[in-house]
Image (cartoon, rainbow, N blue to C red):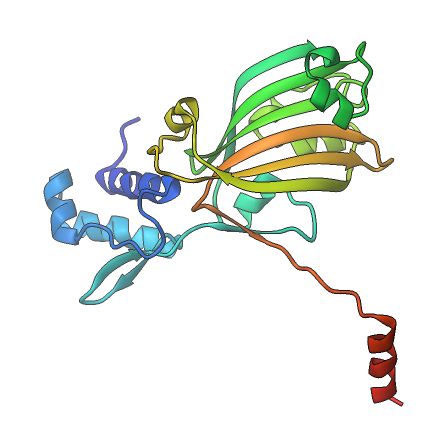
Length: 251
């Protein structure tokens, strides 16, 4: 079904915001420029821009133009939330496309096997997924699931929420070990995420443990850097002397 013209304009601008081509603060094309580009009336362009503003993508400033304000995900490291929940929290429709699946021997991935406490004779589910928001690429995840913990995979669930699939199997997240870093995209990632070579990716590597504190998941996810913000709260333990001083204040 062919898109209406105002929807075509919205998709054009959304795609550039989500890919990072139009970063936060970027001034998008003027109404006149968009009219000329898409061969439409000012009314059609205004409808598209107002819809983007209502959805939180842009801020329209009278006499100045339209500026990108989001959306981007602010993820707290204090508790576990899935990609699906992260996007839904900012009003973005999450999606997932399975690019590859293999059932492999643990001995072929010794680092993963060690992290998941598997023997050489055990097996792994390995799959690659393209994660999307409003049908626009946001991230690529490379996942290994222990076949000891997860004997079978529901492939339809991988197109929506892996967490939901695991919960239905009575596998619940207890804790995770994270390693966060920035990196440049590979040629394959650039093509899948529809980004330029200068776009920074945010790598989230983590190992997830179930309710029995057994590791079952080993994942590398590469997000378009402008789309995800991680909030990390840390605290410093008081020394015994400081604690005594604090107690004295309230005596």
